[in-house]
Amino acid sequence: MAQNDHHHQGGLMALLGAMAFVFIFFFYIVFVNKGVTLDEKVTDPAPAGAVKFDLASVKEPWLPNEQVAAEGQKLFKQNCALCHGEKGDLVGGLPNARNLVEGQWKQGNGLIAHFKVLQNGIQGTQMASFKQTLKPMERWAVLNYINTITNNKSTDKAEDIAKFATTAD
Ligand code: HEC
Image 1 (tube, rainbow, N blue to C red):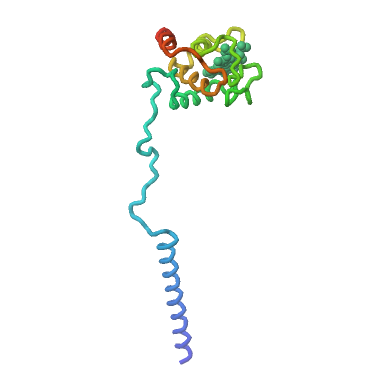
Image 2 (cartoon, rainbow, N blue to C red):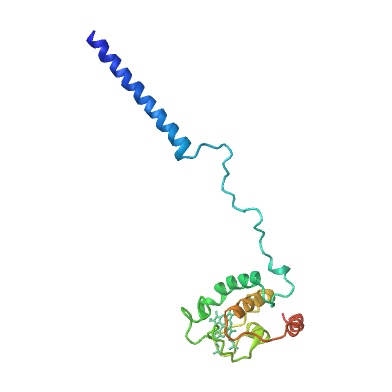
């Protein structure tokens, strides 16, 4: 019966097609997709071990310290980069601001002198006081960062800075 043969042929094609589909699907799952696991991790926003650095826990934030300098860099970008440039070299900043990388200081060398600049600003210039904007430890962190980028680094003694810091607000 010709009609039946035709019918069977169609069924065979459907069967082969289904088998091919199953084979390809199986191949994909096992080899391409590396299998299906039931314990796939949902993206974890706070990876274990990434404890947030707490600047307030640092007793002497003027001492060289990578984490303090990293915090200082963030604060620098938010508060100082507009005028001093993203890298403190005046690129993208104000031409009449100080190039902090060159470090031709006019208010005195060193961290104590710079801290006073941040406390009081520089009269008659655009360099304002940051007393209301940044906490003392945040100002130390910014200066910690600046001391890592400047060619004219602080030579203030750690004990002198510590003594000054007890009186500095
Ligand atoms: C609105 C612009 C502006 C911002 C913002 C600014 N500065 Fe300044 N800064 C200046 C200018 C202008 C001078 C140069 C003043 C002068 O003519 O002596 C200066 C000078 C300085 C000096 C040089 C002091 C010296 O002894 O010569 C330091 C250090 C300094 N700024 C640090 C900072 C830090 C740190 C911040 C951010 C917390 C900051 N500045 C934000 C404009 C700015």
